[in-house]
Image (cartoon, rainbow, N blue to C red; front, side, top):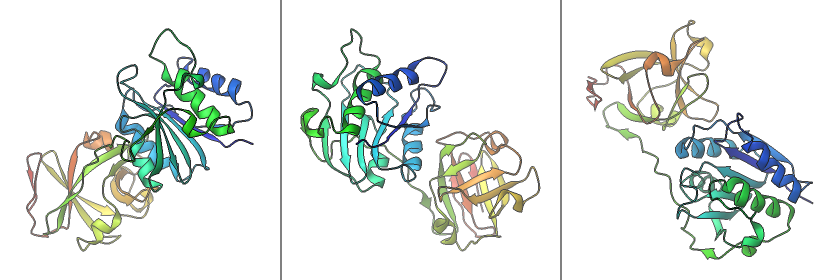
Length: 283
């Protein structure tokens, strides 16, 4: 009896890396089903990988969550497994796992992956997805090992946190939001939810001021892209329940020249607020 392994990485599909990890898992655990969440995370983009894992985890079956975005591979950063109420999280301890582990209620046991019985011998230290994380995911998924067999227990707070900026309301009708994610379609996801906008006195159908890069835009808060004309921007609640900025038939990130980590000020038109951001003052 085995449980699924949900696999996320920044490996891409040009090289053989994803297939090799699949192969290692199949040799150790032939009955384990591997679900590829994505392998399109930007190279070494721990933040992007953490956000993708957090968005996906609530839709994945209970089991093992194998995540490998590991720019510090081969260094002193730890390789860990964390036990949670929905299964095990396996990956580098660099912030990649922390938001998803927190979302599912935290971990009651974390171990450092040090027992070489559950690792592939290798003369190099640059492919821990193949040599450490894949084999560990396989034995956990099939019950060939208990998590306590894999290495020494770590403190309960050992998972390295990922710092996610908090929204900054000014109390006068505006809120400074940070871009957490830009998807393939160019939609811009913020670190705020619909309650943050309703707290400003806004509701679906209202106009929202969006200030960014010395420009202020007045954009409809819609329920769908089609609520505005083609080529027009729309503020909306995305599929993960966050406030996002999109363009009907277009690419918001290109139109606004925005990147992950940038801040935008969203506010109530005529709110009398004044909140400085990237050279912009909304009034």
